[in-house]
Length: 104
Image (cartoon, rainbow, N blue to C red):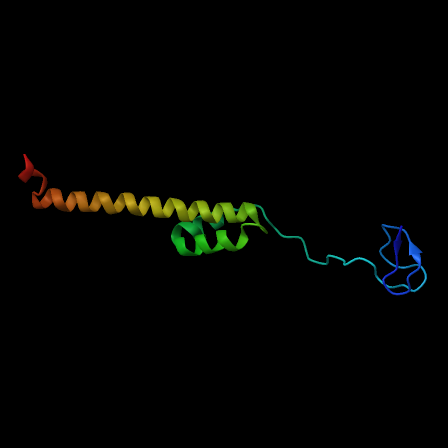
């Protein structure tokens, strides 16, 4: 059995309010439910602006895991695509300049 936080009478372990004095015994969680659907829009935002996707992934990792995952995937795909395009562009530039033919 538990005891009231204010008056000290013996109360049930699961009691939320003391039956004698009316004092709340347990902290109530009044937070509204979080909409965590893992929308593709977060992935698109993360792809368009990768730094935002990374920040959202860090901030939402525990509270909104599905949305965080989508934002993180969008940012990761954007970074990988950027790296691939970077190498393709510089390979095309070096090929145009004839850099690769000098080693033959």
